[in-house]
Amino acid sequence: MTTRIYWDTGNKPDRKEVNILASVAAELDSMIEKFPFLYSKAFPDPMELNIIMVDDLKIRELNTNFREKNESTDVLTFPFSSAPPHPGEINTAEIYISVDTALRQSLGQKLTLIDELIILTIHGFLHAFDYDHERSEKCSLEMKQHEQEILNAIGSDKLIPLTN
Image 1 (cartoon, rainbow, N blue to C red):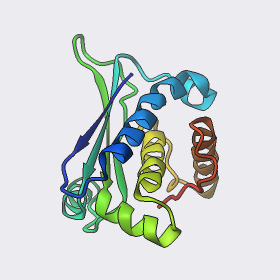
Image 2: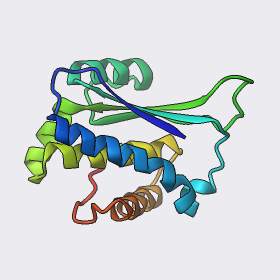
Image 3: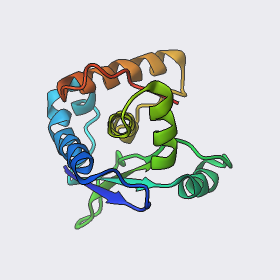
Image 4: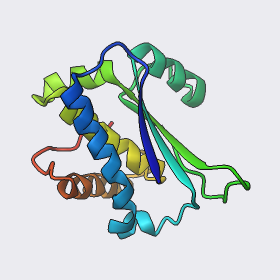
C-alpha cells in the first residue's frame, strides 16, 4: 500500500509536525499485515491511501455532497473497494481531515494538533477498511478497540482515540 498526505489548507503545522504525521502515515502500511482485523478484510491490491488535510468549508462541502449532512465534520473517509480493480487501476481510499476541526478538538482534549491529526488519521484508516462506529454499539466498541491497538503499535498509547 502506498500512503500519501496532501495539504489543501493554509492551516498547516510546522515542518517537524508534518514529518511526524508523515512517519505515522508510512507506518500504516505495516499495520495491514500486523493486525488480523485488517488483514482479514482482504481488500485487493494494489492499494493506495490518500490523506487530504482540508478546512471546515471543504469538508462541509464533501459531507453535504456525499452524506447529505450539511455540516462540517472532523474526518470523512471514502473506503477501499472490496471488488478487484480493473487492470491498470489502483484500489484507492481517501481520508479527508478538517484541520480546523482537529485544532478545536485538540484544544478541548488538551492534545497537540499533531496528536489529534494522528488520532483522526487512524480513525479514518479504520473507516477505509469498512469499520463503521455508526452501525451499532458493538461496531463502535470494536472500532475504538482497534484504534487503541494501532495507537499502541505506533507508540502513541498515551492518547485516547476520539470518535465522532
